Image 1 (cartoon, rainbow, N blue to C red):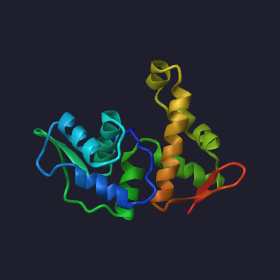
Image 2: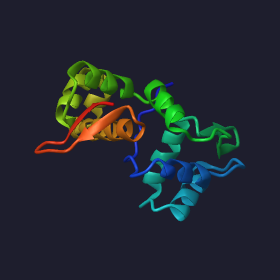
Image 3: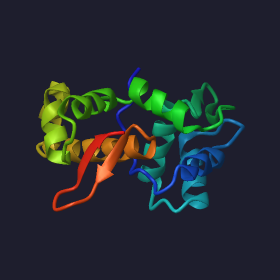
Image 4: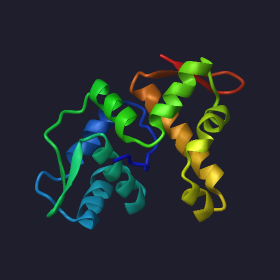
Amino acid sequence: MRFKPVPPAPEAFEYVTRVQRAVPLVPGTEDDCCARLVGRLDLPDRDAARTWLTFLRALELAEETPSGYRRTDAEPTVEGCRAALLDRVFAADAVRDALASEGSLAVDAAFEAVRERVPRWERHRDTEWTAVWRERVGRLLDWLVLLEAAERVDGDEVRYRPA
């Protein structure tokens, strides 16, 4: 299963550990978990918490059980999260592969490289799908930087290159 929600990448990897620790050990409902994340972290609302909860599932740092959501015993590591991101987050591998083949890309060029992978139903569901997916690709690039699979090159135009 591939997950689509991608929260903004934090400034430091330690934040991922903080978010995982905010998820309860004893399973709780999605609403309870989201309220807990909002209360313990600097998240603006339950939608942001829901995105993080789903993303943690993709990184195998949280899981959904019949009783609700709980954190896993896995310790967050850059290597483990990078492998899970590339394997379990939709289009993350395609963004990384586009960087590898082009050498350096801005967000718009990275989006164009993976544009055809956007499911047809998503293109029809939202008239602003290109803006949504450009933002998602930008977030994936920032996650690749955080997880040491890419580097950000600041200049007139922010670009990314393989690490």
